[in-house]
Amino acid sequence: MIIRAMIAEDEAMARKELMYLLQDEEDILLSPHAESGEELIEQYRLHKPDVIFLDVEMPGMSGVEAAKAITEMKEESPLFIFTTAYDEYAMDAFDIEAIDYLLKPYEEANFKRAISRVRKAISSKGSKHAVNEQQPATDKLLIDDGERMVVLSPDSIYYAVPHKKQLEIHTEDKVILSKMTLQDLEDKLKNHSFFRTHRSYLVNLNHILEITPWFNGTSNVTLKDKDQTKIPVSRAASKILIKKFKI
Image (cartoon, rainbow, N blue to C red; front, side):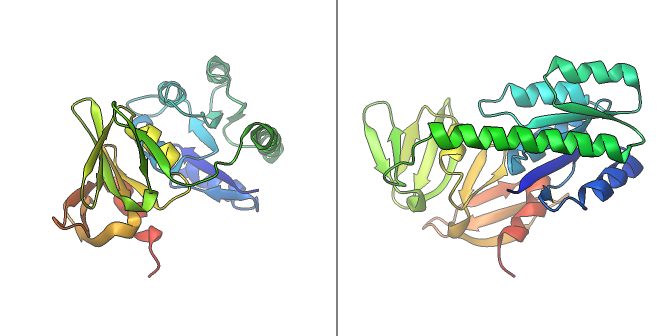
């Protein structure tokens, strides 16, 4: 079992200390870190970590505010471990049902305790899913366009984007409108080659023709459709997109 972990910490030394502890855990896979509450939300949407090590106090949106925003999303929330240099802030961890908290500087025994709790919680969650979830008979999607249920192959989708309170699902020859959210569609396609290049765009990686650097670390992708549609890629997503391809 691989556990995807993310660190949200603006202090470089504290972040490196935690990364050092995590690198010795063979079942932990580190996702890119965040240095503010706003960046955490964006990185969470991109990588969907199982557990987030979250500093209570960060510039701008605090760790507590970011955690509450994530738990309010229409999806299963990750586990949270709060990190803080002050005992009194540890109480914030219990306001959002965090699984544990760690005081800085980190003590190895406390770190091991927190990781043990994470493993037990994820193992228990996986067992429940195995009992309750049924595998679908086909990987095709049913998309409700308001008048009918359209059967759609994931491979036929080039990209999806919200527009005027509806979701536009673009294929090679048509656009299907749906009242589902972009997050709903992303969840349905989680086992396929789709990537959130931007908060408003979900793209099929198999239909990308080229990637072009833009400015301030952002970029654009050009798709293989007849119009060679260009899709924006955020700065955070640009760092990850290249790693999705074999070089």
